[in-house]
Amino acid sequence: MRAIRASLAAATALPQPTLRLLHDRLNRLEADLAIIDFALPEGILQGDPQHRNALHNGTEAVLCDWDTVSIGQPEWDLVTIEIHCRRFRHGQAHYNDFAATYGFDVTQWPGFATLRDPRELRMITTNARKAHHTPGSLAEVQRRTDGLLHEDTALHWNIL
Image (cartoon, rainbow, N blue to C red):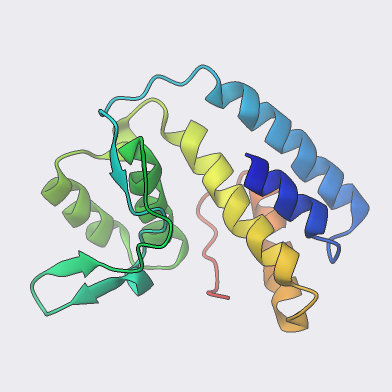
């Protein structure tokens, strides 16, 4: 949550009313995270599992880009994979295949939304922080933010 707060503080390209709404949302998410009950044992986390961080040979994939490796709850990485499948149009079938192979569908776990929401917020605020360097991305950041604030979990995002 500290990283999200830092990104929000640096997101000077967003209007103040939007930043206030995002801060309020972050405060609610922080309270929810304090009481979450994880289903899986701690393990090694890649930290940013996504299609761009995987090497494919046609039948298998291996995660690369391990600069954010840590020990923690696997649900964090699993939520990130679901978000990338849903938000960046990889499709439900793609996610279902992953979950079946992994042996755990994080979307069926009661804590799913509790982890999904701060992860999506972080994905938005990280890009918002950089928006003043890449002005073309500001419209996408604002579109994502509006979707998040309107609870639109089906909104597809464009890669920035």
